[in-house]
Image (cartoon, rainbow, N blue to C red; front, side, top):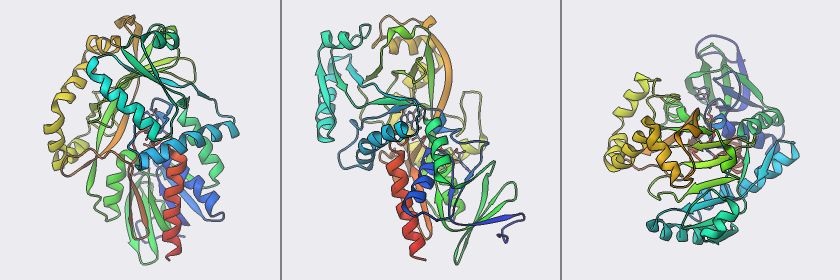
Length: 406
Ligand SMILES: Cc1cc2nc3c(=O)[nH]c(=O)nc-3n(C[C@H](O)[C@H](O)[C@H](O)COP(=O)(O)OP(=O)(O)OC[C@H]3O[C@@H](n4cnc5c(N)ncnc54)[C@H](O)[C@@H]3O)c2cc1C
């Protein structure tokens, strides 16, 4: 039993995972498969799994078409998408491999669309190039100059997947356990929650999503990045019959965001979004939620200012579309001319945990860093839900190596 940092009851384990989102739970699941008998505890601050990014996303099983060949994103998304479909089938979780269209609506998007075809082929993804008439065969209401059809994209509810991972992992999962103190020991780490629970572990894994930089610093490690939160707002489409499947614009390669898309969810409704606006709190799901601490931290990070100086033009457009439904509708109408403002009703938003370096670079790839007896997941944005099974395995391998090193 623990003790030493603060008061309260303690638990001893081999690996302590902070964060019960899909990455933390997938890590716990992988540990149980790779090294049965490893004592794993997951500390999650909310009352259940998947209350932040994992439960507030587009629910898309991404094919991996967008990502630079050789990157962790490309490797893990392509294999992760196939594994995710298999996992859902094995556990009877509703999912569907729908395919999707990426549609160019302006001439200047055509070279980027063509580059995506090449990239998809390099990543081993089945893609088909379409002209306007063929676009209409897939999506009669969608207009575009050209498109590509990606066969392996699918849809699922990642909240359901996370709950299943929690159950299958056999780990002890402590909900309502907000970590607020981490103390390194000669033989491991001791962690205290705000409720006074103390967990002593030989190895620590940080999967705290929107709070991962803070957890790294609590552990005494300077991560060299900070999380800058970007909210993604959604609307529900009142006339879901306007869209059959998944329709995406051609993304701007300067940003790790995919642009406002139309997504038929597993429940049959169609989501429109998300945009990408700076959030005024890390867990700020509307403009009304403002955290002075989060804003203060963000403004104190030189990378935030450098990023803003570089990308203010893009940011201004996104904020305009957030504050004006008419501007948002106009953007959607480029893909779906029949949509009107009355067709769009606000739906729940999500906030992306985007790592930004000191020089203002938005970290594009997944970022996993190690410190003694510790593994930190410092950037796990989209498609990390798709890629969660291979990411979890990679993190688990590193945690087991740290365990073996003694
Ligand atoms: C708007 C949006 C759309 C997206 N669309 C897709 C998509 O279609 N497909 C896809 O693959 N990916 C998508 N993503 C990305 C995907 O949702 C994330 O990559 C993924 O959920 C990350 O999981 P995670 O476990 O790292 O983070 P999270 O789910 O945020 O989990 C982190 C957990 O850590 C907990 N925590 C934080 N601090 C503490 C603490 N001090 N103590 C204890 N617990 C703590 C939090 O409560 C939280 O539950 C989207 C993301 C967003 C925001």
